[in-house]
Image (cartoon, rainbow, N blue to C red):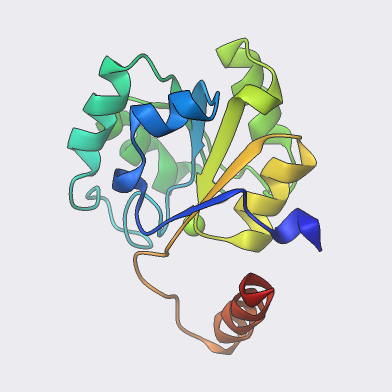
Length: 159
Ligand SMILES: [Mg+2]
């Protein structure tokens, strides 16, 4: 079950600071899109996200988007943010994470995945041997499947 337990938790991606990353020897970030950088399907970045990206760039933290969503969804958003991306990343499979580490020229232990989902983002990052930062979802998806998954996540988080 340890594969589902994130190393760190933040209420929002914008709470992550360059100092925190430095203290924890994290040199680069792989970013999820939906419910991490903005709400699901939203073309506009979440509150404070653009300023946060600037702050990270100033601190020389390379970043890349890895999303399970479609090219059509992810490309315009990544372009707007000025970030390279992998769409249809199939997280928890590690294709996107592998590409990101290669691009950064860093070992997985130096790169953190940042995302809102234990079963895709955190699990995928941990499989790859990366560091992991869970953020609170910006907006909960609806539907019985998502409710079931969230319930399961909550129970795992308690442990
Ligand atoms: Mg997400």
